[in-house]
Image (cartoon, rainbow, N blue to C red):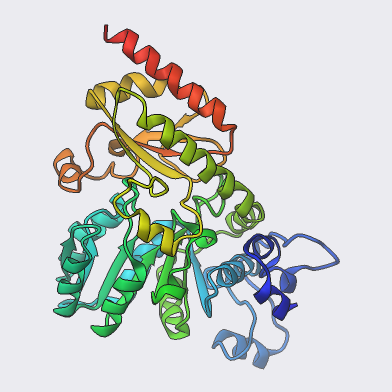
Length: 401
């Protein structure tokens, strides 16, 4: 089955990968195993498992069979050598960074990372005497120049949250490798269905599994994958001791959600492109941001490194936050919530979603206007989503007359 799995298409892998070893009693689904501890009658076997010389489980903070099935599935989808999981996406990001960084180290990154990630770079890592250099997202020459000066980590996010900017992973990974840096890519928006950073030269790929992987807004989780098993062993050790462990019930829910990953994402990105094209014609919209649009600044790069353009988009409106406040409550088929990647369309401004931790000044410095609306397209019929927005905009126009 292993050889067949490697040759299988993504949709098939999303359904079958990583599960066979965990099916018991003839069950067709991976069970939820909530046990905190695991019994051993043989003292030597217990010791061999405890020190990692034999496969098995001893304590839930370390490993769990349900959680391991999730890790194995992600490992297959990213075509990685190893993977380890976390309680949340931010735990995956923070634990990975803290695993490798020490006082005096330097990180090169882009300005447009997710708000929580940005806070680690602007607030927490500087307290550890880690130097952070921010580069304009999409300015590849600037990133290459800074990386060449030397750095421990080159951290990228592409597409970015919430402005869906694109970075050339292959080009940046080459620059990072030349400088001896660890290249880390947050692949949450793209999912392994649309983008595989490890194949493009990245060392570590991260996901907030809460989002598109789970797809149903009912479970928190994160994951790190790499072709360097030593990297994952180090990240796992940091997580194991610091305790940001994925819950087995969350692992089960995300595993279940991942079976429909291809179906969901293909519908979501189809809806996103249709909505983006409509919004371009809406008189109250200033700008539309979606990498699937030919006028997107790095559309050619996205087309080169992505299979599809994903279900995330954003747009800015005339009238700024006042228009946002009037528009969003009048949408019927959308949750106004701080989440993304679910089967339902979800909308919100950056100040209450991706960059709620940041001040208006900080958001402005990152190129995020207060009138920007992030849209995570769901799997509804595109016609209904578009008509919903049309009616909401009609309401806004009537309200300001």
